[in-house]
Length: 443
Image (tube, one colour):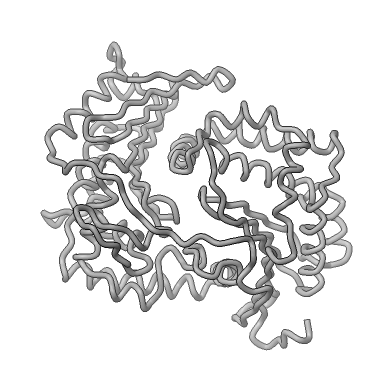
């Protein structure tokens, strides 16, 4: 078992790679009553073309299959539902699928050892039949229709389709109504056997490990023994390198602009910047997100002159929201607001984004926003769910969330200058949702 100390944060992380390839991460949080655990695979909506385990040819699978598989994993061979079993232990269970990973998690204050055993067992015992797959197609179809009717979801997906020509970010994680009806048990088992091998997965446990193990001597090793014993009872195939094919893109947006009509009262606008394919080294994806957040916060954040100007010009009706995303391959920046002046808002944000091709930021302003983001990050580390989820996600992006503070503390204005190359006219797109009774030409 390896132990790594992060002195700046006063955090300690225990890790071990088991014989079957499973990475186990233990983050002790002495004194915390709650425990968070997540069992995750590096498999999400990005991957729709791969060579199945034991085969030689590439297979194209329907969009949304990673999310579909996540839904089905809770149904166990004996007919029980893992969610109900967790609830009987007093534990809250859930799952998530994003573009990069699928995770199964629980949290609670008691029966943690039993919960870990159940977590490992149900994820490693798939039960997929023609009948339960057909039933799930109807459930997920309703879920997708609900998302399609949500203006914020429609706005995001509209912008992604404008930014990306083929990259999977242009599609909903759940797929499409057409794609999910093509999902079969055979497809699901091929995905499961390829991506749910322990060597492609991480188990993370965050909590008071001494309390979990009844204050036993060497509690971290005892917890690992419990996990080792669980895995030793099961038979796994030999781990193989996973061959997958993901289309990547340059910085040029697919479309410059677009809009749709929905049943809303105030128009919604999103302006996006496409981040092209790059080969990221360790921590690069994480630092890209953090640097972009500092830059955006200093440019259009709620304490900036630009934000006040947008209010004075009535370009926004309230808050403005931004998001920075990279999956370690491609990414985007999204700036979103409700506005009665969509075209003027779009023009204003486009101008602000293009101005960042020549970054002019005073040292005092830079340090102020950098300090603010550092404070937010440190406060978030008191949330066990945040630690567990972000440790996993950044691990799959070849980044270490606990190294962020040290790296971010050394950040300077010159580091931000390296971002100037991304802010190009051809990389920007916008998408608007307007009320059904409104003419786009009139706004």
